[in-house]
Length: 410
Ligand code: GDP
Ligand code: MN
Image (cartoon, rainbow, N blue to C red; front, side):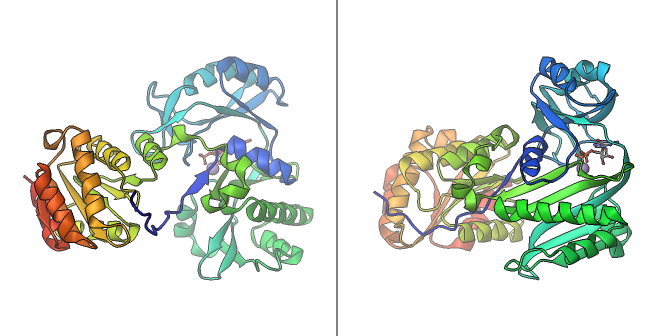
């Protein structure tokens, strides 16, 4: 058995779909237009009957922003958000369901759209922006608001930095109504609407705290012609470190929206993130993995991935790690960078050798560079030299990184 090392656990934030977040919001008394999700065209037609009005909003459900301006890959259908007469729901849902939506946030591969949200068409007078996030500078939650919304907050801030209102919230005291009302007024809500907006913000703050959110972004926060204030779109992130006490929320994770290789890696406790370069990295420890990526870049190379194998260097995880790395067609060389601490070099070397052999030996992988240093380094080197696995072997980080860059550029 390989003793577990203390590994930096990478923080990830669960991202839920708009329709899932809307259900949570309603539980906390946050106003939203009446809405229902549909998973098939037939269901969309049926559910549309339950939404008031002759017209209806049909919205693609993918975990990426900019849906309104996106387009579908398979049929070039423009727009992931449509306002249509109810008689057209079947036609529109058919063009969206089971298709891939490309937005400026998804990259050209897009995200699969398996659900449409049907929402009541509300008459929007004004679109505002509102968010709550954890702020390093103030050491607690920070409310951010803007008089204008709808478009991305980066664009709003670039056009007019003074449009952005920031109000830190004391995490012990919680949000106070005068504070929320002041914020609402600064965001352009007047008269009784300012009170209504303030109540909505206070309720969103409850969601933020009680559901262990790391960020909650409402865009647009809509001011309606009939005076109501409603959340028309949201992006909410939940802290993975709190998943043990937010099971109901975290069980709703939609892995179809994530990179399938990253999902597979997570099952093996491997922290893998795909990048664009051609030097695959396999490193123990998140800090060393980061510095490996930096050094490769400094030396003129480019990492194909971040991969922290942690202390979990068993034959099974190493085999999986090589499979994952070789699943990326851009990879031209592999840099295994191990610093033996509590996890000993000889144990890791054995697992690396077994992993290479399990995927089919050197012939099945790209040129290999192995750097070993630390506990039992001599024994580790010996295992690799005698294994029959071909690798450029070194103790030195820079030497190894240089060789990996050189091999990738051949
Ligand atoms: P995003 O493009 O992914 O941010 O999707 P949104 O849900 O924000 O939708 C884009 C835009 O569609 C919004 O900014 C609104 O202008 C419009 N929209 C969304 N829901 C409604 C609605 O119920 N009524 C009206 N009139 N417009 C809406
Ligand atoms: Mn939006």
